[in-house]
Length: 159
Image (cartoon, rainbow, N blue to C red; front, side, top):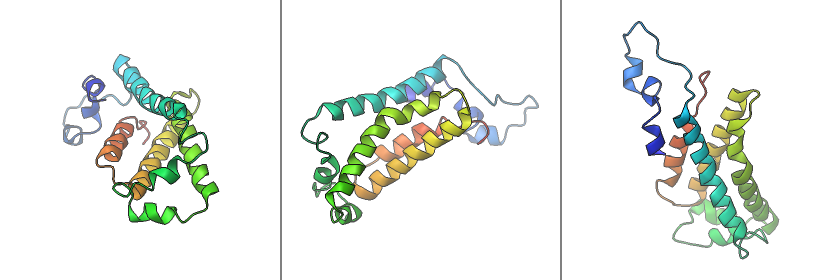
């Protein structure tokens, strides 16, 4: 993600330079180039390959027990995660299959050609909420924060 970010003009919107820009020539509001497309495809690859790997695993995903088993790893589960273990198994199975299905289809929301800003914001907000849920349940370090920053790079111009 950092590699493709090098070729994007993120400084036009996401920097102190843009806030203090005194140049009368306005900075571009929309950027669509090869790097933008590559950045978006890289996001899709991250989630699609993750979902494909999880789908291949017969142990956790076929029965919908992935969340249940994951929350039993005491070194990663937080107190909120342990609280979730008290929920009925069908709710944990819904969380398991919901996360898996969302990893398959969620990233493709950024490519919907109609109402692009709406669907892109929907994808960004949904993935941020997904990672907030991960952080509430698991102590996984900086993964959630880095992933959220990746999604923020795709905020539409209107936002």
